Image 1 (cartoon, helix red, strand yellow):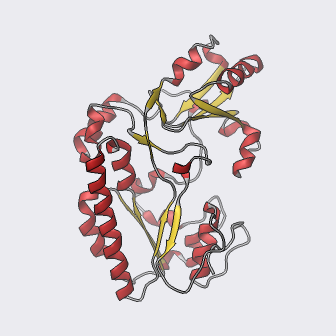
Image 2 (cartoon, helix red, strand yellow):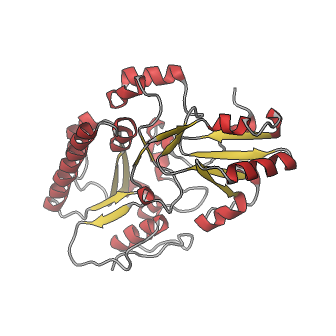
Image 3 (cartoon, helix red, strand yellow):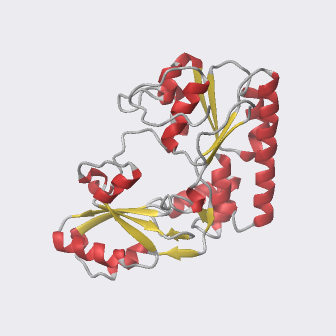
Length: 302
């Protein structure tokens, strides 16, 4: 039922990784370019997606056994737990402790097998203190419904303009809004997003720190009910259908800063801050493998 212009048309595999019958598809080139996995080799690589906090013991038994040159374990349950439970500080503390204990045990297991061990986190979380109805903000601009399209995520909205005057009014209206920051397509180059046309939007509106957009295009009441019943990590969703904590804000915010820890002696970082594009070249260097020319990042550890 969603208008075609509002459908996200990304070719890359993203959160649907866990839904793939053949996880080996994750180990293939990305848009024809070699990935970290293809350089190492699909048969020597493994990607494991895990999203159940109460099943970490089973995960522990199946990973870190030295069967692969590169094994990446995505402990995604912590992301879900924080989105829906951040308001309960005691419970969040228990979740953090449980994940810490899992990481510590996996590190010990890796050392006993002579394996290198790297901890990666691509972002943090910010508690939500304000819920914003972005559709209402746009309706207040009193524009024809066919003058623009919008795809609303929790902390970002993508806009397409079908009328020049309407686009100018939206840019002016949201550009002065106190609930977020508007970024034009050409301004996305500052974040290494080189969009040559508007397939991925004409402008982007990012929520202010601690804000979340609701309703959004991921919210569907029946789906929320099913998630509430089937996934105990999201039980609070039944009473509060919007995120209790969020990420995906502009990169300048502290909660968007991740980290990389090499749990091994004999190395030092080249700089205090590195970028996400530096991760793949760094891991390849640790494995003593040459990186392809398409990887523009730098090696972050010596």
